[in-house]
Length: 158
Ligand SMILES: [Zn+2]
Image (cartoon, rainbow, N blue to C red; front, side, top):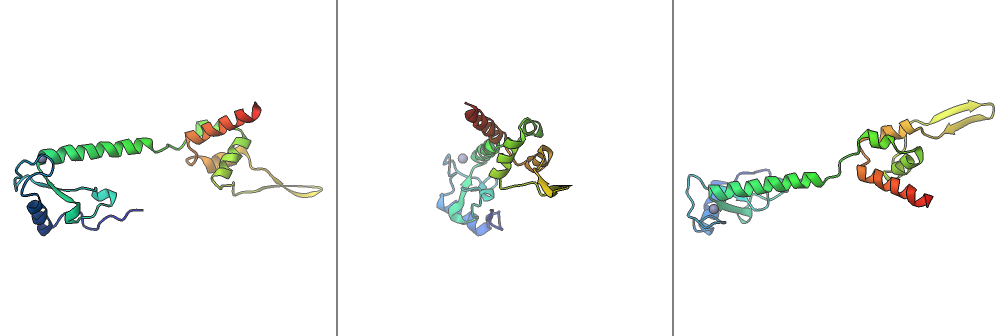
């Protein structure tokens, strides 16, 4: 959930206050700031729900600001890298129905359409097909989960 401040830019009054708190010097390298190149920076990033308040603000020289912004961009890229990617359908396809069923159970999912056959004894429900499991699990199950299911089956076999 995001609770971003509706206002991103520091007001003139806030800027003046931050500037004065720092004695007109860069918060990072302490060089004298220039009114033309000064950058007002959110200590906790605005996109990370940091508020546009004086206590969350810092005045930086252009050099320090560009270094900081670059570092924050790199951090964001790193974070994205660690998010598990949904497994491609090809690796899901390699699992059997029992393995797919256990993954569906883990995600509290079940194929919606129930297949029914009728014979002389009446109506019978058929278990979902592999295709049905693939349809509901594609884009949800991660590669890691598939590996776990594979390992679990190996353990049972031993
Ligand atoms: Zn600086």
